[in-house]
Image (cartoon, rainbow, N blue to C red; front, side, top):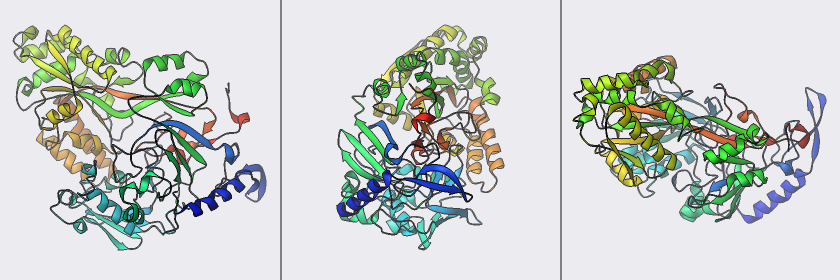
Length: 572
């Protein structure tokens, strides 16, 4: 992916240029199948693919600081998942796929996982990639000197927390090699979902870090790749260019030759839709109702719009330890007083669907329809619950503030809509306060938040990612001992996925029925991509939707390609 030296890259570029114009005749089952192309790294393109010189995809991306997963996430920039190889990848149906590890298995007691590293992998400078590189990578993430900003994600690994806190040395971390191609990861307790967690295990190049420090990933001259692409250009404030990595020998070799990220800052979002219509980018995230309305009014653009439910949930969290929300009847009253359909038809139109539980539709163990009744919209039942709680018509109800994070106008509008519904249906006056993000998070983490509108999105595709959040040891001021036992038990079930899911079903029912939170909506993502872009990853998955994945679910860029103009239907 990345260069070991400028000389090496010069050779690669010459070789790439020579191949880009070649049209080769390949054979299927010994018979000629017509003219097909082979790209610069030797991958045969699909029969309807355009020439390699046209295999380019452009998009807008946020300009950030580092291109290394285990250095930072919050300041990580486009490409950190593309230039590095993880142990495991996911397909569009959320099945685990071999990547850096050809296979994996748990020990008989379930407390150690063995990952068998694929032989023949190498960095872009030709250095072999082995199990030792992942040991270095995980130690880098746990090293307190590195101050990694999402170290909490890897807490199931044995001694991770103690190493991060400086209480134990790096070599005490539960990541070790059995031999050059066998990686062993020990866990604090039995952790059935560790392979799901380790889709985010993007390897860091030890030799580059030792030579250049944290700056190794910030420019092509020092960048070393292990994944499908390498860093060819990074012009700060302008663009990042990634190219297919000829030194990549893993299972995710791309069809695409070049990925171009046009960089911008969060404070100055570019005119995404206008650029898309002007054919300046091939992919765009649609974030406003105005943009979405413009698209739906255009007969061609609307065919390139793809919407699907994100694995994120917005909900009201309440302090059930002290104050008025210790009364379950009050919590039930709130849950029945809010019309989710009205919320998603107004302030959130096109960007949300109603939620009645924590796990979104399509997420493992989700049972949205079965749980809907417990928090359904029913104003009469809401008033009855409030009366039974001792506040008929809202009389005598103490002052309540609803805190909303100061990071989204539509969400703030939704908070005001919730305020109006509580007034209309319960006679309760709730004050909405828009709070700075740090103040908001400090309050929720310390259990001082009385009532707040919260978003939580998945980190990996397993019920534990969303359910562990509600354990009594977590950030919410809600506790249910049976819920805790069920979730902990489910996390320790190895080799019996049906039993695991059944335990999560039981746990989520407790969460919803006890109104640990009032669940409001699940996000809907709206994406656009040109009809000339195809690939299996963009076809409908088992849940019936199409998505352009560049997040923790997977990486579309390794499977897509540009079609010939004659193959595009509905072209302008």
